Length: 463
Image (tube, rainbow, N blue to C red):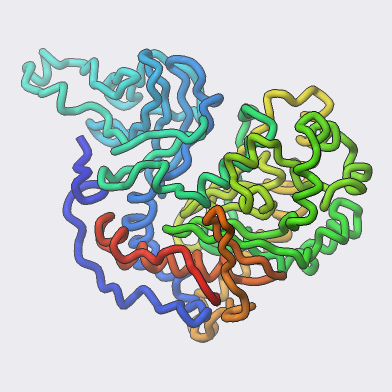
């Protein structure tokens, strides 16, 4: 079994934490994108501790259904057992370490190792050892050699997460208000279903650059100008001036456009049926009656779940460390680390169960043209990310910090009567700075108790 008492697998070696730079000035030491020691520390102190997104419940609906994912560089099997429980098991045979599942998803009754035939049940128990009597002389404690399970597995409204650290807080508490708002943003029209297929590609960039870019509305007009010129993006979406930022503990954040209070008041006057009717209009018609072509009209139920401030946020949420919720809440992206200079990008597509064929086709057309390996936007982004990462390896160029000081000290955190906090501003870099501030706190804390004791609270006042 895994020793969960020190994260994953035994006592952690003391680290020289001087390798974690001070980022409080808004200047980013480029070494964080290329230093192999920092990368190894990230795998131990972030990914092996955090709650990591695994899949949606619709991807493992029946007993024996499994889905392969990663926690950092550890490959895991997400499987629904005969008892209906979803488990997360390390995809490595306890005998010699061979991967059990080679397919990315499927249905099975058992997991059989192709190396020596060790066989495991859906619950991870070792149920068969070839030659147990003849070769092992019955001298093997079969119960002790089951597949290593995640320390905790849980879901929030059908979205499954797992952590390898038994000391982690509950998923609900880990997500906090901002993380939960991010997931709720996908549920505006009720229950959703994940579509078949996950788009995957590797970009030559550090995973953190792919994360912080989702909050960046400064680059859109420049980097994605070609998408505007061919008519894919409307010029009004290229650099929206009305921005809202929500910052949650442990690094969760939402950043991007917003619906103003005045606009929200008009939306609140609509019935759910009227909202749905508007949502189903073509983009050109929808733009005449809503703040922006692709901003969802939240239902009354969604407003209750997201709160009076969260419901007005239409930016991009990131659930720390690496889950981006994008594109009207119909896509999720994982940025999986593959060394300091490489990131594997996964794109999941989820859609409301209520969508008809026309709505589904229209949504898939937009999604396939936006993100993923062939997306108009991600092709631009990938070039930028890879060049920024390459510069972090230069002997001289890495000496010069990156600048994330936009709007630093210029805005106020507003507190709603409900208690929800937000920054209402223009294009800014507040969420990027918050992400890196929390990233450094994760790396400096040796365990969950220390992280919970030293983490920064959600900011107040001038920021």
